[in-house]
Every structure is written in structure tokens, then in C-alpha cells.
Length: 125
Image 1 (cartoon, rainbow, N blue to C red):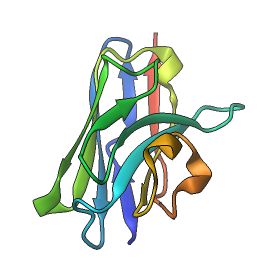
Image 2: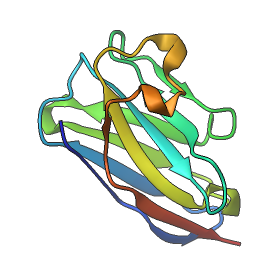
Image 3: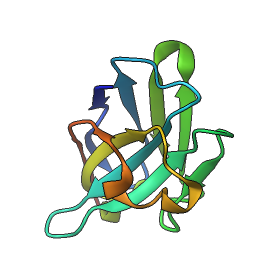
Image 4: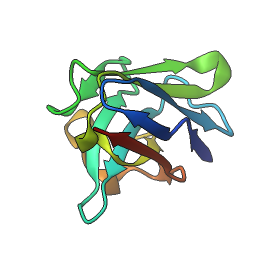
């Protein structure tokens, strides 16, 4: 599976963006797909994931209620709708996928086998 992330940009605080992660192959039900981000000088952190078995969605405490992850199996695409953006959301965002991840490992980046290139999101105050 090859992943292509897009949709980043520069926006002002309070704005919205929608990121897309398109897979070269099928990433329908058997794959868990997640978004991670890495801000300058900081470690990569988990943002959101949609789990492979029951399509349940999971979020970090900092994004829950503002971000929404969803998938369109027909388009082999996972989206991250980001609302109420603030400067602390500035980072390079990466999508990742894995076929065998267990629920307790959703937030652990090195458990994912497939990664896309990053897309930069910059939020100004």
C-alpha cells in the first residue's frame, strides 16, 4: 500500500482544513488508518485513527471534538476534517496504515507499516 497525503495549507486561527490520504491499493475495512503530526522541534504525536475491524474512530485529547476522521472505501481515501484550528495545530501531518494493529496500539507510530509523505498545516493567530 502506498499512501499520499494532501490538503495542507496556511490558514488563520478558527479556520478549517480537510486533509486527504489516498491509497494506491485498497484500504477498506481490514486496515487501520491514522493521522499523526509532528511540529517543529517536537516529537510525532497521534492525532486520530479509524480502526480496521469496527471502523470506530479514536482521537487524541487535543483534537477530540474539533477533528473528524472518516473514510471513503470506494475512493480508497481517508479524510481528516479539522475545524477550529489554532496555532498549536501547526505541524506536518502524516497518514499511516496497518493491517494487523490492535486497538491498544492505535497511538503508537512505530506499529504502523505504511506511511505517506507529510502535508504541512500552518495556523497563524
